[in-house]
Length: 269
Ligand code: MN
Ligand code: MN
Image 1 (tube, helix red, strand yellow):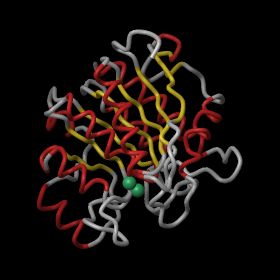
Image 2 (tube, rainbow, N blue to C red):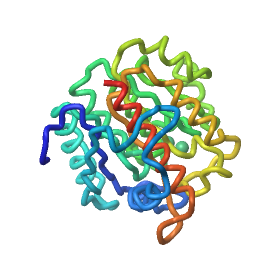
Image 3 (tube, rainbow, N blue to C red):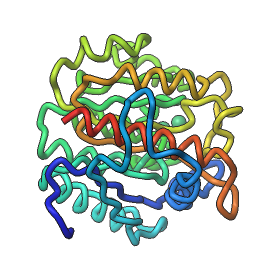
Image 4 (cartoon, rainbow, N blue to C red):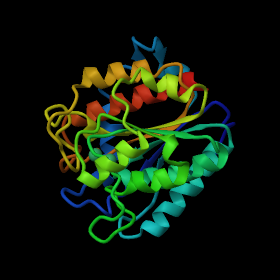
């Protein structure tokens, strides 16, 4: 790490898709996001901010293997721990959703009162999936165990098992109005995890588990803008699963979400 991390926004690719159950390929998400980011302007009108004016570093993609979750999670934890320890905001490019877990574990060691805000089509609250306790389908159950049930908020969810819905109802994790997040979290530090399948498959077809009935890009963008003023200390954009090669224009959608997350993190701290 070459310069002071203080107030830096630190991009890190986590090309892992070892528990993908339908379409694998999220390991190619980070490279597709970087490729398609070239099509975007660096300036964001709603944020009135320019990537050229924010402190931004790109740590590249971690050299992790999708057959080795233990090794991969250790690397993600270690890197995020160093990034946050240095005063920077980690912005993880997935990879499948399981990569959120070690990132949150590292963040919570620095921010004990961390809130995780998950935007997702799916609950990801199963206790086990296909025999695995650690899976993209169980990741938010593990996150809930890490931060506590009062510190997980979910937005955009439209699919889950009966048990997952019951758990969410019991713990009150679902937020219907994005504007309520600020009331709930106040000044607490927030980790924002965006599973791109929160978008409708017509907007984001290149994802691991497309789920009909999702939001438009504009609706997601409005939601992100509504989160301004919240203390966002890091986050991730996961489940970009590009078609072979550089993927299609879903990559531009993913890259734009990353751009706005950078601005949210810049404003948040
Ligand atoms: Mn999902
Ligand atoms: Mn997910």
